[in-house]
Length: 198
Image: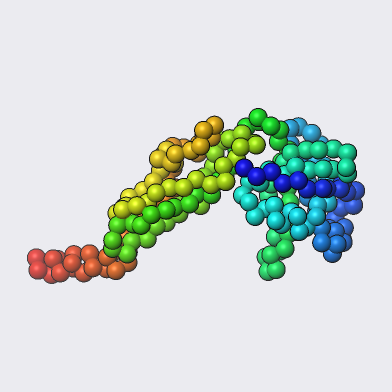
């Protein structure tokens, strides 16, 4: 997985006014916490952070005030609902070799069986436990030839070495839904049979 270096500054001003001033300077307020230590309030460069967060579960190497180096992963990101800019970020301290629980994106590949059926992502991301410095960017699942009613469970997904499920094995991740046209045709056929019997 990718590791991105970002310089950060500790901050001592809090509240909405301070946060607005930070964002006016194209920076983002954040909090670094974990491993039983006191939270560290940070100011991070907005553009660098935005680029880093394009990678799910990115590993961030923080240079804090030019004195301390820490590894962290993003745990919560707040964005402006309309403009989409970053408003705040929560970062979790990690260390090399440590196991963390994260959600990794699920990508489907292949074509469903003919019939216009729909693929539903019950889970867009799969909760897993994995090493903090080896978080998979995503898992890919083949849906080639699946018929309506088929489902892919968490236990059916092949995970990279060192990664284990953090959900029940029988959790439905993907399922194939019958197309509405097919359902309507079945309904009409059922009505026709009922009328014939009457």
